[in-house]
Length: 114
Image 1: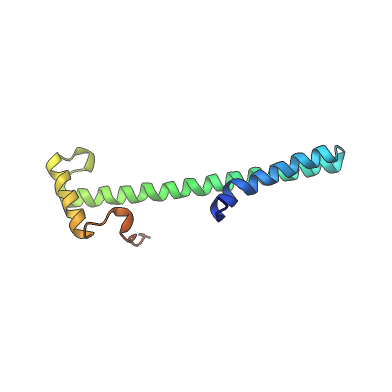
Image 2: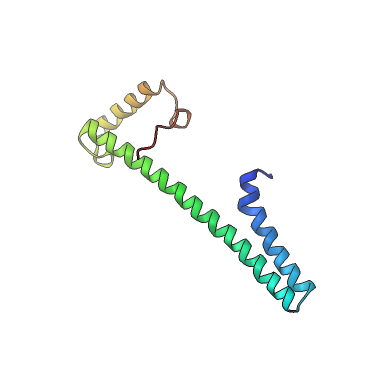
């Protein structure tokens, strides 16, 4: 339940926000208001940072899909969404031969292009 990723993505911002509200309730003067603003800002900052990081990872998946589509085009002369069922079957056979029957999640990641 408390994996490092889950801790940073969910629990740490939640704790910051709860502490912010607690500071406002405990001390409703200027110190409590400033503490509230700092804690809420910190919690929201962590949430936004996590979201930006996840968007970056999604971009890498898109880049990998584009790389695979271009490799398919180089090999078969058509884009994967325009391929005939025979071409798709041949690509699936080629992929299973090259990976030894392993699923894509079991194969090592290829080196990133610069």
